[in-house]
Length: 250
Ligand code: FPP
Picture 1 (cartoon, rainbow, N blue to C red):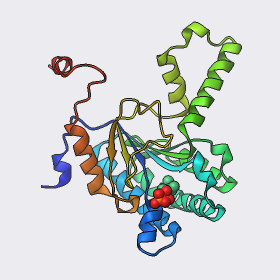
Picture 2: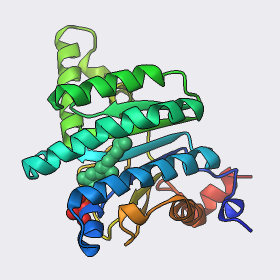
Picture 3: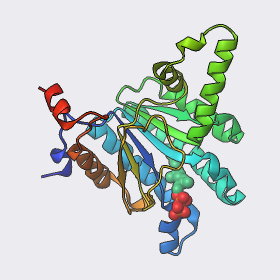
């Protein structure tokens, strides 16, 4: 029996988000340069995207580069940026074939020109993909994103497009979705650390969390399916009681 056959097709998480951690440690363990870990990490991205399409996941968001990652040594930042341009260019034809629509979230204006170009090109080329939304969070932090949303709302109030009374959770949700992603169902972090690191703080409010010691370059289809199977064992109550959830499912 293949692992995919153990997955309940009626309970697939709509949105899986992944903090891909452990590239550097994976490389160090093998006596390699950190950039080799990132290079191998791209292979894991490919495997997980294919697995997500197979499992019929509709949204997959990967944390490729955080606002805080700008603080890394210049050579590493440059190596990651170059790798991303290369990976996106190489993978785009296969993404189109698989019906994957690429989207980028984060402070795109801060990226080097070549990376920005590749972001715009691949977004345009894959815009008709209907199987999976693959979202790459790049130069991203959730606090940056929420600050941007607050600024937009304040400006819309000032310009009388919105009244103060109209500011509700639902409205904030709509503003976030305009520049970001929908609610997360399953949040995976590889590499052994148990933290969220400024990633999708609003959207992951009710996400199931899955932490694994596996380093990102060793994470692939099997590990992704294991995380989905683990998610399917959980009872998602959204603050309600088990009895209420049972009654609602009848
Ligand atoms: C975390 O490992 C990984 C990163 C900061 C970069 C991840 C980027 C990629 C895998 C490339 C993404 C490619 C595409 C196509 C979007 P780390 O360096 O923090 O590892 P460590 O914690 O072991 O040092």
